[in-house]
Image (tube, rainbow, N blue to C red; front, side, top):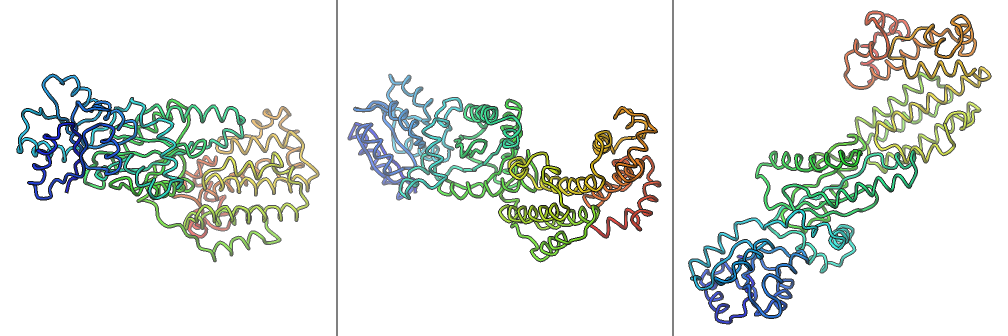
Length: 526
């Protein structure tokens, strides 16, 4: 049944339309009628009809004024215009404002009227012009935000839903986030961060999303919600997914180009009508949270994400191992790798990961205390915890941070045991860390730190506790172990990646150091 409101100041025309609709035996139903534009607007908001038959010339508010007001209020209804010969300019204006068809009053008969209504019923609702500015107004943005965040009563929500989408339109909610915005603020200051975010938000509000009607809401700086309303989408689920991916990725690519940022987005399921927009909002946010494991600059569909849960028993065993009193660097690094591999295999919810972060942080503090070290000797600043929470966004960010923390602790312990390392040796070690994948010779590093080769060799062995060549070899082997425990990269590629020029030499030296081949090591520790 299609519910229709008729607005015409001619009583005879209204009676005729009523009688014609009654002949359809329920296919079309007269939901209400009025003789003036103002009364008609109130009736439309109250009854929320499927279609509107509208006369151009009416008292108090004519048809053009009524359509403009409906557009301002976000009321989008399939509209059939009733017109006279000399009102063609009015009809043109009405079509621009979203009216879908028109009939000349003196040519109306039962067949013509019903055919026009049936044709109109099958048409998608005409979208507003993308550059009209209506969708991105402050009022609409505020209303969309109140709808998402539950600040409306049930009655208000029901009315708001229909202002964004009719029951036969398809809605999708997308939640987007500027990647590493907090890291940018930490590095460049709040003022520059605010300027960057302001630039992105302005671009969002002034850039239409193609092929749909869109509304935007700024939940917090750098975190935005989009409501996309489509007249229709492909029937095939795969085609729908591909179309959404193309539309949203093109839009995000434009933001990235213009604002010099990367953006990650979570995309909800597709639903008819706007009544489940709040649930789509929750689902889009849940999809976006998977950015933590998937990484930045991705589009993540809600239908593709699974339930997160971790192996609690395995986690506790690994954490207990890290709490052990006697661990060398290699054992500690291996424990961290196993811990993160366990989480990667069975991802945990983010709130659980935050709890894990603080447990692990406590373990680091215990290690620092046991070794009689000072935090300032290990981390660049005493605010390192806040810096980590503000600048790390993905699982791999935290993985790298923990490994760096472990290595920093053992570097500080080694330095303390040797009574402090000379600046030339410290600079040489830093050079190794940054260039281990390249060819490095004792002569190269001696020149880099501005001392003679002979003097540097003697000084390095005294300060670092081993010859330069052995230190470099150990460092490369540690990096190789990390790569062997991660991913499926070919072993000979790993050898070259960490600076070995011969695959066979790498295999031989690895077995000599660890008592097993790289292949056996990978099989045991993955």
